[in-house]
Picture (cartoon, rainbow, N blue to C red):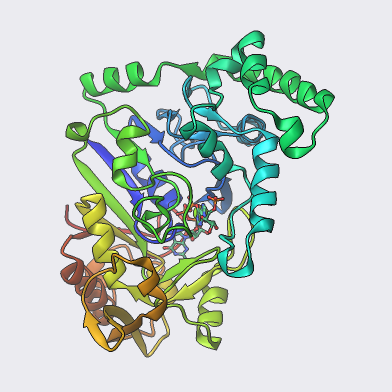
Length: 420
Ligand code: GDP
Ligand code: IMO
Ligand code: MG
């Protein structure tokens, strides 16, 4: 038995979906613990591509119980479509469980997300996914949110929705609000069979000695507390969020696996010290097919940032790392990792406490020899070109945790397991 958290170590899109799917083979339960359908997790099986936004990435294994826990914000219409799409492809969702206490995203949240973003000046835009994530979490923290359980009860739902003055706030007609209530009651009828007491369920599974994988969405630097605030999402993707988002306690978590690309990307606005704004960055985007899974936006690309990764190790209590997309770096004469920052002419080895300093950072790089070979079909670490092995070992030495998994392609078989 093991209870393990899988967390994005960068700005999201690190390959969490692929790694969660890989680890699901040996897992009994996979739990999505925060975020919503701002996430886009890709799994490739036998050439078929699955883009999951809200259903946990363990769903392709029939034996896995897939749980959407209290920390997640759910757009029920999107969830139902995702369930239907999986069923249409012949996958069973009979083991899907949804927390009664997860919060509900309404179309009004999406409208607010758009209007808030359009009111921000150019340099304060966040570049949100417009999925209503921020406004829904705002309602949750302001203690006026609507939970999934309320979709089962007309009076309770009506009272909660009417508690918001959507008509004044967004200029929406009362009839439209009423229509949304009716539609959400229908969603409630469809989703009711999946809704359970997730705290009870997860603690039973712990008692039974089951293997539980808590799947983070987004990434450490998008965390509302530890990320590049305010250019962040509105939840806690970091490992602590796995506890508050699921009802499992910190003492029950044995491992924290961080997932990082062999380089780094960011979609949306905000500081990015190792960004490559040149042709090389563009080539990396093309080669890595770095376009958003949820919004299709081009991702900004850069060299691996060791300073950032070290910080991610700290704030997650990370025990292991998975490095993905190593194959994308093949064919380069050199690869680089930022090992320190220069800020106002001074060298610093640590992630700045004041995020404003990030815009002044000049990264100090260490350069490593590259490799020419195509490495996609290699499954044994020691069969990788020596220079690729050295790069992985350098990352591991620099950040101080073992790299237990290296991914060299988007499909299941293109994975190298190492020690630990
Ligand atoms: P997530 O949000 O962390 O699950 O990541 P995304 O699915 O948004 O983006 C990662 C992209 O990289 C997806 O298209 C994956 O299929 C792909 N991918 C994952 N691991 C690898 C890898 O090792 N090599 C390559 N070439 N692609 C990968
Ligand atoms: P996965 O799980 C990458 C980014 C958005 C924006 C910021 C806030 O696939 O890694 P939001 O809609 O959450 O209010 O947007 O966060 N963002 C992501 N970037 N991967 C994600 O999820 C993201 N989810 C949100 O682009 O910059
Ligand atoms: Mg993604």
